[in-house]
Length: 95
Image (cartoon, rainbow, N blue to C red):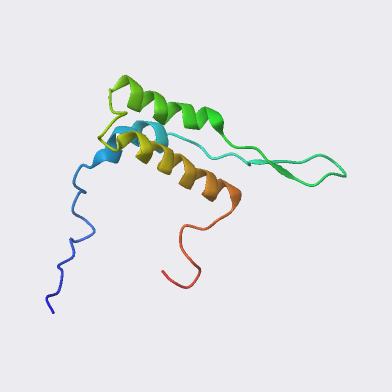
């Protein structure tokens, strides 16, 4: 079986379809998504304003059809929402 070589961590990543979203997500600051009202169960409040930003990037760039860039923006937003909700990016003890 042939081994796949791994790039050293210091090498820059190759541009992919998601680099168009770097300005949106690199400057984004996560806020508490849970709305707390005394005596009530906390309610999750999605960051729809953040969702608008990558969708706008894709539409203005004409990247909404066969390129796959539009759904990748939605994927990035959804992953950011899962992190805001408390899901970890890595399991504890797995590095």
